Every structure is written in C-alpha cells, then in structure tokens.
Length: 313
Image (cartoon, rainbow, N blue to C red):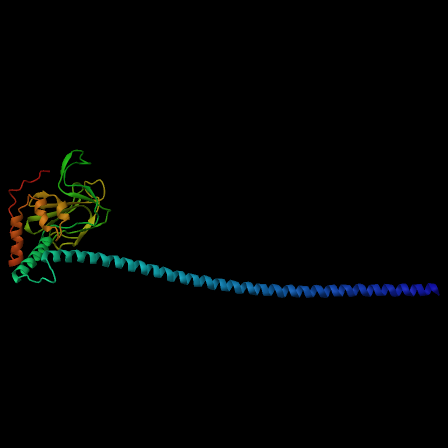
C-alpha cells in the first residue's frame, strides 16, 4: 500500500515538473518573440528617423548650395559695381582735371564776370587750338604699359654689341598688348621683316610728322588707310631684331628722329611747355600752320626741315 502510494506521488511529481518545464519554455519563447518584435519595431523606427534626417540633410545641403550661388552672384555683382565705380571715378578725375584747367585758363570767378567778348573768344580759341594740336601732333602713349626698357639716344646695342643711336623709345609690354595711333594720319607703310623693326607700321601725320611702331606681333591696318588718334592699329610683339616682347616707338619730323618722351607726356595742360623741351623743332611755323587749319580750314603746309640736323644711324 505504502509502496503503491509512493509510486503514485513520484509519478505525479514528475508530471508536474514536466508541465512546469514546458510552461517555462513557452514563456521564454513568448518573451523572445515579444523582444524580437520590439527590436524590429525599434529598428524600423530608427531607420525611418535616419531616412528623415538624411532627407533633411540633403534639403539643407541644397539650400546651402542655393545660398552659396546667391552669395557668388552678389559678390560678382559687387565686383562689377566696384569696377564701374572705379571707371566712373577715373572719368570724373579726368573731367575734373580738364575743368580745373579750363577754369584756370578762363580765370573764372563767379562774382567777377567782367571779361570782354574779345578776351573770352581769345581764350576759347586757345582751347580749340590746343585740342586741334593734340589731334595733329603725336601725343600720349601708343600703348598702356608704362615701363621704358630702352630710352632715346646713344646706347649699347644688346644684339649688335656696338654703340648705336636708338631713334625711338622701347616700351616693355607682353605680346598681344594693344597699340594705338598717337595722332590722326595715314598708314604710309606696313612692313614685315625678319630683322630690323620686324613687323612695322609707319603713320604719316600732318605738319610733317611721322610715327613708327615696330616689333609688332600683329598689324590690323592697311597701307594708305586713314586712321584717327587713339585708333587700334596693331598688337605688340617680339618680331625682328628684338631681345624680348616690347613696342619700339619713334616720332620723326621729316627724316629727323625726335625724342618721343615729351610727346608721350603731352596734354592740354602742359602744351605750352613742349617748345622748351624740344627746341630743335620750328614751333612758330608749326603754330602758324595749326592756326591756319583752325581759322581757314586750309591744309597745312609741308614744313621745310632741311635746316634740322638729321640723326645718323
């Protein structure tokens, strides 16, 4: 009896333990499933948040690019405006200089307008005369570059290796720099030589003046073509007998080479100083011819230059 009861209790205990074991396994599987679902939900939520942040980041990048483009456009417009302002200021300075000269020339005092008509006309004629003279006489720079690499006069020639009289002035300039006519005139000659001046333009002007533009890279005018002051005629280079890119510029009166430096500095304000700087020219005859042009519109006389000593090569 006791033995039978013990067997029954043992059997019941094993059944209970087995049931408890399966229950624990079920609970563990359920918890694992719930945890897996939670992990999947968290992962999906995190991925969704990451995608949203990525899209927001792309939107911010596009917005920054758009803003940077706007900033670049504003900076370009600002630079353009600064350049325009600089150009306007340059023009204003130039106009102020002319106005200052005319004011001084006319001795204008607003409270003292007591000039006679003849005196006023005389001053106006002087201004007109100077403007005409600056169109006829070679004046100003033929090229924007200001560095003089070789001056007018005797020098040691770097290629010929001998003492040589330099009939013009060399203005150092990069190849392709614009070259302009320094006075109204006619293209007398267009040459292209492997030595000497290389590519050369000769312009004949009124009153007996001629200008030379040598060692050019390109010529854009033709022989017998009429040109006006400040007209583009070619581009500087390194052709002919030359050691580096530059413009060789000459001013001649008849066949006599004249120092171009004073002519390059000539303007309406210092016009009366040039006769003292270049004394070998017949300024009285030149002025007489220019006044004839101004008052009678007659062609200028071809001045006699025989008395001027010609400079030998």
